[in-house]
Structure formats: C-alpha cells, structure tokens
Image (cartoon, rainbow, N blue to C red; front, side, top):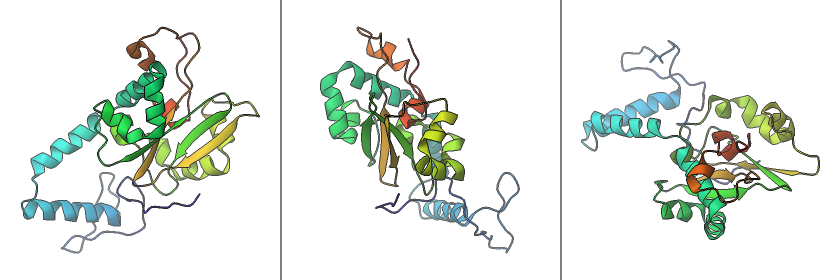
Length: 222
C-alpha cells in the first residue's frame, strides 16, 4: 500500500547505518549494539538545541515523561463518547481531529481519521514503513506493531493475522487495512457490545481495549 506522505523515522525504525562519536568510536545503545544513524541524529539535534538555548535537558525530560505516561485511556473515552452520543459519533467520523479537541484531548497537529467497525466491515491499522501510531490517544505502540512481520503480513494476509490475535471473522466480512503515515493516523471505533444499552460513558470506556482501537482485538464483553 503506497504512502502519500513521507514518514518520520525516529519512532523505532531500524536502519543499517552506524553512528560515530567525535572520537571515532561507535555510539552504543543500551544493549551494547551500535546506535542507528537516526538515533545518532536525534542525539546530535537534541544536544544542538540545548547548546543554542532553545530548550534544556529538564524540559526534554518532562516531555518524555508526558509521552511515557500516556495510555489508551484517552482513546477509550473517545470511543465511549462515540458509542454514547450518536451526534458526536458522526462528528468523529467526519473529522477525527476536531472531535478530539472537542473533548479537550491534546493530539497536537496530528490528522486523525476515525474508522468504524460493523457487522459488514472490520478495520485494521498498520504502518508499513515504520511505526506511525496515534500515541497521543493510545500511548506507546505495542512492540508487535513495530515488527516487520506485522507491518508486512497485515497488508498481505490480514485475516490470518487477525486469527492469530483471536479475531476470527465471518467470510463475508470485508477487512479494510489502513496504512498510517507521519502526519495521518487512524483509530478504530469498534462495534459497541450488545447488552450495554443505558450504560454510562465511564462504564462503556471500561470495555474498550487498546487492540480494539487498532483493529487486532475486540471490546470486552459485558
């Protein structure tokens, strides 16, 4: 599936380039393997920004802590609102970014597209080039999302991948695979479980799993 936008490869992509320190020795990662070209570039740019006074180490640490603290809870609230409020659901499907801001969810400049599962259609999200993912809503991506196996097989054989995650779809269900890019991310609105009529948004949010918002899982059943 071709990409229409360039990717930012600082999200875990692996490259064969080896970075060198000013002394000529390779930088080393935590597991004592050479850092990739992109990891070395990130270090160099970060140190240059600090040197020029544009930021400081404490601010960078705060931003990293904020990102690490994110979880799928915001995404679950978004889905629960869509289940609970049909008008909001329509706005979310029409403009995912605007709907998030309506809920005061900080998604930055990200262009978010919400896609909805139904009995006829099941949506699956992947990033075929690296690991683009709606981190502001779902937190850090799971390790399997970044693997070459998932990135390639989700496109070639999505039904087989879904079965491995425990999602066995009827033969007449259409599977749509959405390829994320650096500036365009997807979130799946799973089908609302039966028997939840009259539930509050808080109760509904407890049924929403991270994998159900990627498409590799289903919501918890009541």
